[in-house]
Structure formats: structure tokens, C-alpha cells
Length: 457
Image (tube, rainbow, N blue to C red; front, side, top):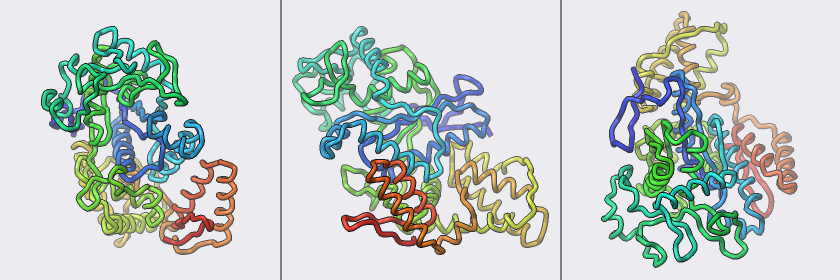
């Protein structure tokens, strides 16, 4: 019954043994806040929210850190396009992130550090790398990490350093001692946002941000580092090299990576322009349907996005909400009970949510049978409620779930007017909250130059 997790670092399932018996330190790579989150982001957040819930269920005090990258080339470019400063853009996008991820039922992590708040930590780590001859100032003025200075490079991704150097992914750059070397500190171009450093005004490279933020909050050695499979190389590989070389710690002991989201057998990504934002999906489906869709597939497996899969997720939720509605008519008796063994085994087997859902449906059937036969069902009801909470499902009012077709037109239009005023006043957090409130009630908004319209979904 002990928890086993698949550790990407060793390519096998391992018994989970945290550094401290009652505490878990977990760092998950967050988002670069220049645009709205898409379904790939949703998968990362829901997966690690479910892992967070289960670790706490096992009795661990989880120190969950999830960062925001709030300075990089994409952010600078987008802010320039909109003629606003980067803080205004990133504040707006972080508010939107909280609205979108909150609508999926994700709990807030313990800490949400921003890269721009950790410049001293990054500069300190870079200075340590230079002192240890693992990094150097290039002819361009940028500070670069010398990849061949780290003997274990490639261990996480399973890539051979010589094969990488001869591969097509490596750009030739005359300022580098080795084509594989990557940027730790980038000299600012005229007019760009910049921070003072011993090497001149500039900003950090992407990889150093997470190494510095994770070690700052969790120490030089901690338990879990998570993120999407697309980050395994080069981002996570580079994080390991930087952190271990600079401070001598083991960095993360267990590496957990969720699989890709695919559309038509192709990875969903902004670079391929085949992505859907959370907001687009939740115009047609309740956010909890998207959460159900995500956890119905094991987190390490590919997730095939389609309307039919979302429809199946909604049908499953409808069954569970129907049971919740029936339970609301029975006398409530507070009761503590053990979770079913099948459910515990599933979650302890590398967070196998499809098997956990199968266990939930077994309890759902047994509970409905007991209700039909007017038997005592308090233990089953307690198990049902606990399992739902651990998966983050069926957390809304059951009557409201089935009455989504009944709308108060005047109320909807009043909220739309309030949202418009909020946008005009640049209160984007309130505008996003109104959209999320209406989406949870089954109302999708469509913005156009002519104004905002709405429809039932």
C-alpha cells in the first residue's frame, strides 16, 4: 500500500521515501505569463494538483512551489506589441491564470514565486558557477554555462552529449566555447528591461530561473520536481546541471513528467498553432468536465483531445452528480470511514487516476443500489464524498449542475455590463472572474468588435 512513483531520472517506478518523514518539498514548473493558458497547461496543473491532494491525504505536509516566468523574450515582445510595460502584461496574465486554473478546481500551492523577485538568487548561483569554472563570460557579454563541465549531463533525458553536439538542434554560435553551452545571463538590448549584475545590465536565461527559485524555497536537495514531458530536455536537464554544480546538493530526487496533449496525433502547442485555450474549451464545456477529461487518462500517457472525449467526461460527471443529488435527499450523518483498498492501491501506484475513477464508479453503483433498496448507505456515502474530494470532482451544487439550461437573462446581461466596465477600468481580474462565474453556470461569452454576446452551453 506504500506510494510508488515513476522517477524519470531512473526510468522506473520507485518507492517514495521523502527526505523528511512527514514533509514533502515539491516544485512544479509553471507558465510563462504572456498569453492565456491552453489545455496543455491545464493538464500540468490538474495532474500536479491531484498529486498534491494525494500526498496530503497520505499525511504529508507538502510544501508545493509553482513558479511564474515573468520575464523573457516572448513577454518583452508581447508587451511591446500592446504598448504596455511587462509588469502590466504579466500581472494581467497571472490574474487570468488564477481565474482559469481556479475554475478547474486546482488548489493554490504553498508558494508562487515570480522570477523577477528572485534576481539576487540567480545572480548568486551564476557567480558560484563562474567561480567553479562551470560558467564563463562569452565574447558577446552573455554568461554561458559550460555543459561539458558537468559529468552527469544527459542523465535525465538519456541523451548522449556527443550525439547532441552533432545533432541538428544545436545552433552554431561563435561566442560559445561549445555549441551545447547555454545562456545563464543575457545582456540587455537597448530599451529592454534589465537588472544590474556583476557582468552588466541584463536578465536571466530561462533555465537558471527555476534552479534558483526551487532551491531558494526548498533547499539544495528536495523531493519532487514536476512538469510537462516537453520540459525534460533541455530545461530540466539544464536545471540539474546548474543546481548541482553551483551548490553541491542532489537537487530533485524524484522527477515526475506528465505526457503530451495531442490533437490528430500531433502534440498540442503554440508553435504548431493547434492549441485550444482553457477559455475556448470552457465556452462549450464546464471547467470540471475538462478536469474529468484530464484525470481519466494516466498522467504519463498521451492525452488525445477531442469533443467526443469531453462528451464522455461530461456523461461520467452527470452520473456522479445524479448520485450527489440523491444523497442530498437523505439524512446527513457525519461519518469517518476508510477509503476502498482499490482506490488506495490505484493512487499509490504512481497516481493511477483511471483506476481510481474505476473504484469511484464501483462505489457509485453500490451507493445507488443501497439507495434504491433503502439500505443504510452512510459508509458508502462517506467514501464517495472523500474520493470525489481527492480527485477534485463533483464540487458544485448538484441542482445547479442539472439546471444549467435555466438562465436569468437580466442577471447575465448585468454581469456582462459589469465586465465591460471592469475591462475599461483595466480591472482584468474582475473581468476574468465574471467570465469564469458565467462559464460555471453554463454561459459562454463571445467577444467581438461589435460587443459581447452570450449563449447557453
